[in-house]
Image 1 (cartoon, rainbow, N blue to C red):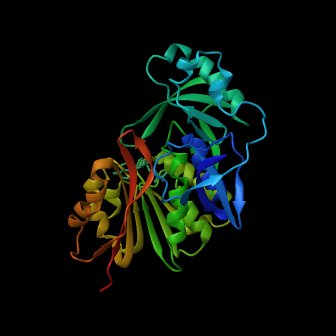
Image 2: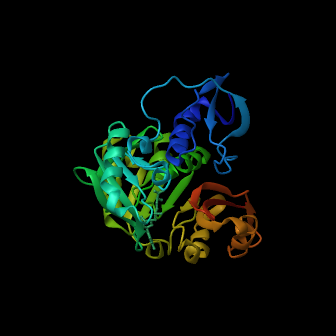
Length: 340
Ligand SMILES: C[S@@+](CC[C@H](N)C(=O)[O-])C[C@H]1O[C@@H](n2cnc3c(N)ncnc32)[C@H](O)[C@@H]1O
């Protein structure tokens, strides 16, 4: 059967599959196939633009052999109209499942929770994700099935990361971005990971062992405590220096370094000029922002005009990290400071 397809190198297969499943974009009625050393993944027709994930094309697929339900909503004895109100996607973080419930379905939340608990292999607890709040971007979660707390260990890019979904920010939707930034680090680079959360950028960078040093900074002590827990379990842990501090308190007097990451999507723009001063000549700034789709083309140029050292920056084409809302995406901007 003919279908839209995402074609990725095998080395990116696990990451891409996880991202597609989470977004609800993988077609589960068709069998994944290979082309040489690339995987050909069948995707739904209305998947968001995926150009930065790999090649998007049309391909023929064999049907997938019939098994159990391929959609958690099929476990609910609801009318198809009611089922269609539920999101087809959800997040899996370690043994925790998080789902966002639309208004009006609160009274049926336990049924949704039980359906997800039975559907997701290895799930221990299911939470209704009420979104992140406050400067520390902590998640508000209500348990709707299963038992235990929100502390778990999540596997991302082949690494096990300590997380506590209520005490410190973590999103599995950033996994691919963590890998992309880590891959770009050159031998001997020094890194500041600002607003590091539980440290997934720092951990991925340190694991590759090209960086000379990584300083991971966050104002939330719980985030840094979790990062310390992860670092204590891995052989490369000593490469990362975790620091509890605000970016504003950390930066003054710091030596500029080759890679600076600023991941504070809603308020980071206020810190951007001072953060950009911490980028050494020849270095790179990775900056993340939620951008309305209509602004996407112009936003990088607008941001670049606010950077210090003019005209000393090359602007790479921005890329979408993940959809954020029906009209906006989380977007990655990479600014390279010219040498000299
Ligand atoms: C979007 S989360 C970062 C996620 C992390 N970089 C990742 O990839 O998972 C933003 C983080 O910034 C921290 N934060 C907020 N304001 C801050 C500030 N002024 N200085 C330092 N950290 C801050 C929050 O505690 C939170 O952990």
